[in-house]
Image (cartoon, rainbow, N blue to C red; front, side, top):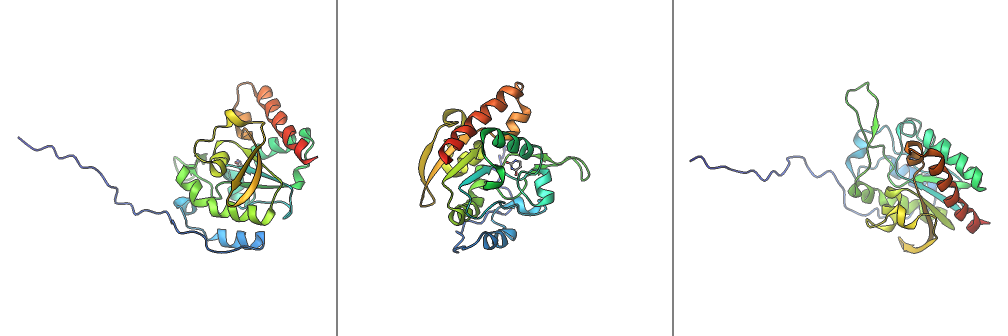
Length: 222
Ligand code: URA
């Protein structure tokens, strides 16, 4: 009888993650950006155009934290310049927050996507927890320089990056959380990701919910 040999397949792919910490103190956002530009801590750098770091005033009182750059952001090198960003700016203004006063960034700095063929549309793919964790030092470095009074957490990936894998948007949205993160006491208001508003069946209701959560943030900053 032929033996059925089951191959408990270890892939022959090398492990492309770098575990070592980023052992550097950054005194400016420019330094963080320059260091992150050549980041190879996870495999996402291989297909993305560039690392997209945050934008906004160095001493912003508010940080807006998204998931990862999308197609437009990857091309332009700036966060939230596509459709989700436009919606976010509108919601912020409606909540009484000047978008120009916030430092806007993402939990993951490289665009993760799938693409059926080279010239086809690049479809956003959610980053894994491992990719998000690998990118953590860059976010920690940005937060250490900006020292915001408040972080608005946009969606699940951003929440898991700062609050751990058990984070659920539905349980905490619109509330004020206080946690020690990367050695700093942080105040956070979680809400949904603006892309989820664009996808929602009840788009107006989802948009109103986002504005209501941002109003919680606006009250803290007022
Ligand atoms: N979605 C995000 O989470 N971040 C961006 O920069 C753009 C879209």
